[in-house]
Length: 439
Image (cartoon, rainbow, N blue to C red; front, side, top):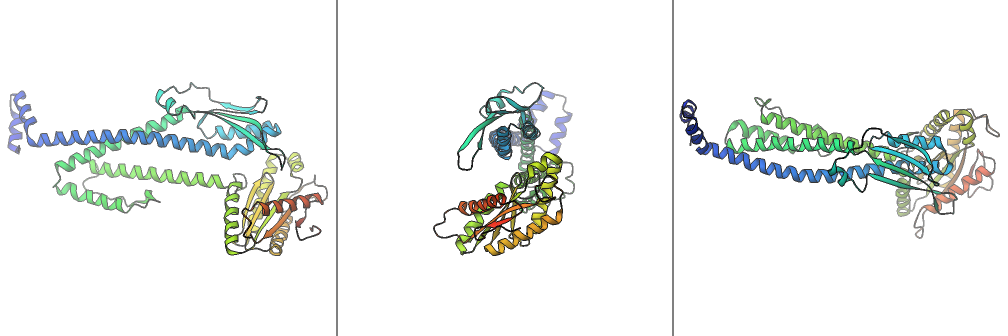
């Protein structure tokens, strides 16, 4: 074992070549070199494995983001293509392009004519690795289908073409690569020091404190971990290790927050702030199953803003959007029970799901909604009879029987009653048990 005196003599030795050989042959140096070599090798191997996993995860994340983006706008894009509405097509394209993951977005009608498009003018990314990794998903041509009639099948009405911006993905991949190798290097150095100074009180106790802190990490809130304060280690490897772990945990927390935000976006209507069609389908299916299991009635109220297209044409889309927001807020306020649920079904249509509610009780809720909308007094000079915005409503309720496999019949009944209310003059509430609709 090399002693401090030996080290001093090696430093002062006038024969550099001999001094260097003695240092290489010392057990401490050999141990440090081998430890560092093994640690770096393992770290590099682990880094390569993490890079492969990171590349796969990045591809999966990009694929998920693409699918979610398309799912959010597919219905609107199909409607724009079917109606040949360039303004709506422009909003769809701009919304997709604003996500930042696309290099080119274009909406075409069924004849291949471009209705709206957005493209970046800078030079496309040409990295061979990412081009190969995303070769099968960097170009997406989504066929748009639209159900022209209620009983008919969906028909093709256009195409939504998108090209992935690989430079955006590349930046994230490079950033993750740097983080992986940086954390790997810090770990390798920390492992080397630990093995060399394994019995040193300067290393063991702080590492145990870090370990205890990591044991207390809540997987749901990793960013709130009890970061240990290590005295005398603020600027050394252990301090940097803790800072690196904190950076990683904060990054995990940010990822969880972004996931929750995306989940919120996927279930909430972006214009009105209430539940969207996707969340309605999930809630309705769940409530139907509970009602069937418990033998309780389930009620549906289908609502449609009367003559909303003339309102939109006369007052403009901005006022039309504001009208939808006011109606949605009024509907949400009219839901007095915690279990009552309201969603925007699409366009100017809204729907309520009322668990454990009979038809008579559902009609009372519909009347309360009608009075709430009347109190808004939103001017509508294009209406046939009323000078204000009104709703037509179809109400249906039933106790699911043992042979009722799906809830589509109940939904269809409410939709049928809504059609009857509109055909009888609008601003009415109709149900299967009411011979005449009432205002």
